[in-house]
Length: 108
Image (cartoon, rainbow, N blue to C red; front, side):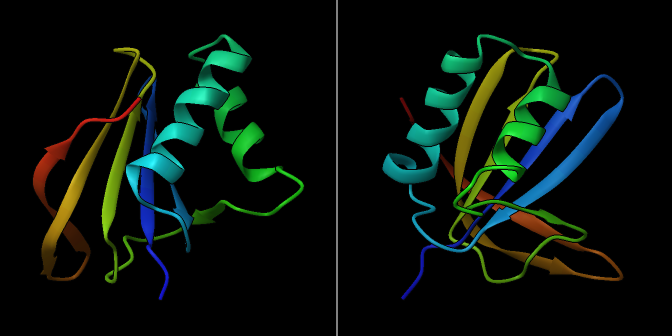
């Protein structure tokens, strides 16, 4: 069984969603996001997104909507220079699915 996660990256007035189908737990995706940001040494959203999506292992993909089978939700806020993680408690399934965040999960 996969541990699915979605990552919202906010930079300037933009937001981009990414999806990862496996290892979505904080020790997997969370640690990877922090490691990559430190290695890139930037909070430029374009650089972070390109690094994640163009990875040779194809671990991350652009998402055009909120997936409705997630275990973890991540937010990289390049404007505030933060990376945060939440358990997913459910979804608001209206015209556009919206994730219902549970507890904030520490990562690093």
